[in-house]
Amino acid sequence: MSLEIALEWEHLAREPDDFYLPHAFMDIRANDFLILRAVRASGGTCLAVSDDESLDWGVELATDEGLFIAPEGAACVAACKKLLETGFLKSSEKIVIYNTGAGLKYLEAFSTRFPRTAGSTDSLISPR
Image (spheres, rainbow, N blue to C red):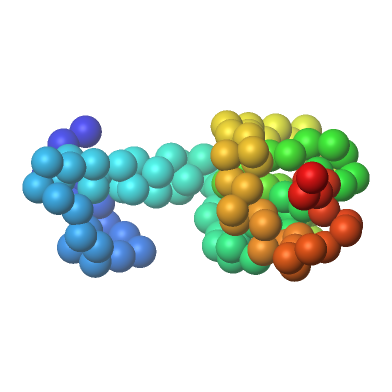
């Protein structure tokens, strides 16, 4: 789909110039229109998940399920929880969430949930 075709879409949530992309990536701007098209055609919805919610769910999944997933995967779980609470999704439905990354790639982000102090004895790594 070209950007010209994408711009013909009516009722967009925002104009394509609301954000900056280098000239080499101008055609990528059409992708958000493709996502909006798929959401509308499927009767789906979109919602925002904060960074804090994403990290909180990442920690919960690691603690309760033994899954140390990337924050974007945890954001999907947080969104699913919200959609279940609002009734958009039903608990009787089969729900699939794809996780595409490992939490190990985001240790710095998750470290905010596990503060350490110098000389702390509760650290997994202790000085020799």
